[in-house]
Length: 496
Image 1 (tube, rainbow, N blue to C red):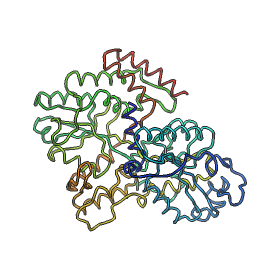
Image 2: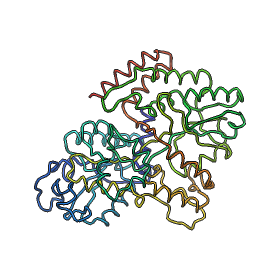
Image 3: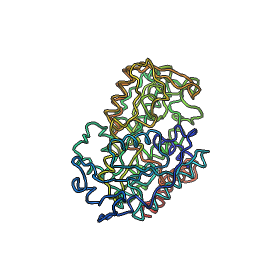
Image 4: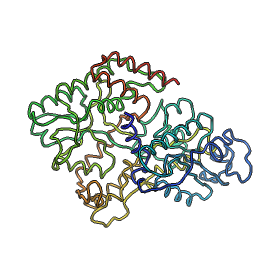
């Protein structure tokens, strides 16, 4: 679990590590003193030249600010992250040029990428240092939350509810964003972490083989029980073809993350693992492997891989999606993942590049203005050349789909005009080219807007579930005993 969690974490730090092997970035540690929220968090007078304005002036939209919310005096925002990407650095420079009275200081733990162990140490340092600062009432004005316990911060009132900031911002139009993602990223009715991008989680399937089998799939509404019945039909049709490539450990991790609200009540800080829903999930996973519906994934899907009908996949970008649709000799189709019977229909998404505002910051209005800038289409990475016959994947962000609907539509238009996408030479796909199929892009739009189930991010709770679930899969403990053990451990963690 730890290795898998770290692997996912490395992909979620936000436009940071995709190119960090050759990026030697300098920096320090997240600020707990100086210009961060620990200074003058309660407002009042501030010394001239300190880079701060009184909290009231920063928050009421009038005192100490120009018309339109611009501060009249210099403001310095501290933004803590693990490792700022080139895009984030460029966005900071652009924002500062547009708002000359605002300076943004990026503080980070990553100094040089050497290996996975050093990166894990940097992550742990970031989490530990930022946690200590936040709990002490200090910390940065803005902070990257992908690797931090957002729910605990929210429940302790350490973060600003960004829904309030959106309502107060006349320039922010929610219709310009993927509202389905924003609405379903809330904790207890409040949005405390703004996702700048998001991933989809689904099944990629061999549509041609499935159609020939005669199986009828309503992937907008199916449950895992429905999937099991369809899988049996597919297995009977072609016994030489695996229905689903996965592993019990991976499926447990995925199903738990996808159905997190069923097992953890963040508002009341209570676990709900000692329930038929969780024990049923454990039994369902084991039965699928016992019956041969699912088999261990030793190789990935694609040309030359094990023949399979389905594989669980994350969809991380437009280009990622188009290249996946080239699997199965061009007969691939994206299917919404089956949901637990206890949940409603809809697709799954993973919020990414989440940013929050420290509730103790004296510069909440300025901090929100920068977040809104990052989320807007002008800050999103969009290929610049409209006339090119094809695009290099090296010019396209892999950090997820932008939360801005406007930015996404621009990307789609660029892809349509380009006609083809080409990977960089000497990369994993080594100059591979795929068509920017308009019909496939239209289908993707439905999945993006239909994603309403937020996938829980990697956390200690997930590690507990993974560690204890293994004993059930090995036949060492019953599902009920495992559920009780997880229940007790998670309750202890939630109430620390």
